[in-house]
Image 1 (cartoon, rainbow, N blue to C red):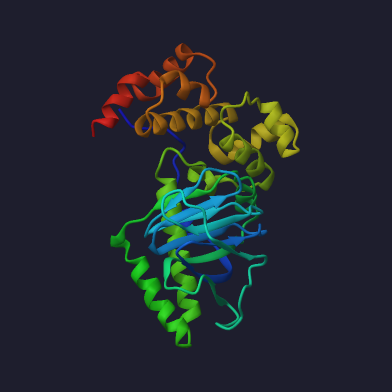
Image 2: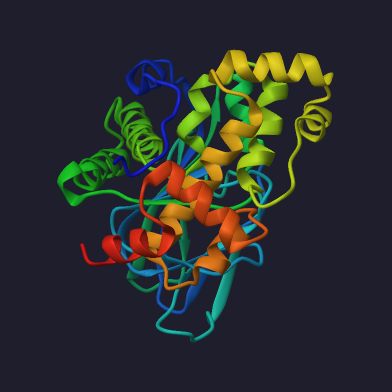
Length: 317
């Protein structure tokens, strides 16, 4: 039995080949121990890749995200956030706040350096705020409600390549900025590929959406699977008639909104059962099922085993 519900066939390579990214500006962030580097909310989503060191990322009032080498994070647009280089729960000693995508022009028109603290940095990242030249994709990112985190493999060697490119940027080598931008695009593609191959991320369907109105409703459905969605309520979010929305959604996905919602809920539940010590009732409620029995029936129909058996089998791996 497959580990995830069946879904409309999706050619990941075809979508990735159409990925058209524009990085507004690349930023090398270096943060000393006891410092925090804060960014005010920008219009574009941000991609951040940890080159070295450990620390935390805080986005708005959400729980902190642990930072470690080779970890990549997409921060939603219009969200304030800050990086901390601290040990344990100690508070940062000092903040440096960046109020626009530009904090220094010394490194050139498309690349900048931001430093917090004068000592040797204990946390180093390469960051870039980006635009996707696709209105539907932009609409999905606009609907993000939390940061997306993916740990890439050291075997990808992206970090080593970025470090070498940064050395060229520091030396003013011709073409170094273009090389750094290309590497950031590689990170973004690897991040998307990993998301598209998992059961937990709403980006698994991103490439199928061509209408930004449907993308807006889809982003709401994916970030709030626990709500009592109806075709009519989703059509209202899309600012479309019920019939036009249902037809457009089916044309993009090959399934109706409620079928996609069921698959999303169960995929999210499977990921939770495999990685967290929470009860079946809690998992079911968190993805929109009012009772354990209704959740168990739906889960068994999609995956075969009941939720408890599924969770035990995954945690033994």
